[in-house]
Image 1 (cartoon, rainbow, N blue to C red):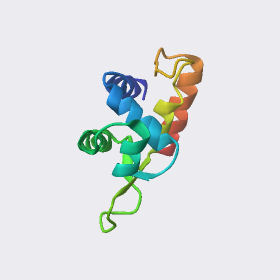
Image 2: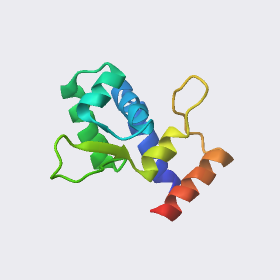
Image 3: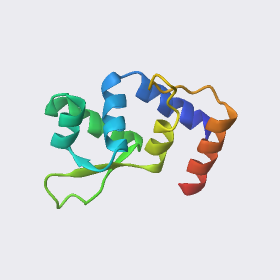
Image 4: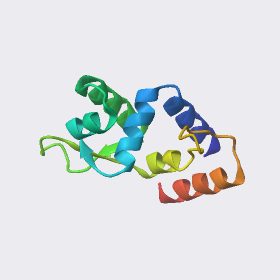
Length: 110
């Protein structure tokens, strides 16, 4: 699990937009427009970022595809990544005991 967590955390850290969108969804379920308003990003950027995060398993559609506008929420893996923020609000992954406990909990829930 730690190798997968390494990959996921590195993936999120490489883009400020990914981190901002994940933080915005960490505050609760939201549509694309609401995430754009929370993050001050363009809707087009938010849409593509959500698509990428969904492919990695960090975000999922909450209400299904029949509902428009789509509502997104974070998955267990996305919540675990958000818990790894330091005091400055950036995500770090060093494999500390706290982070290993989070990774084990995520592994059990998947």
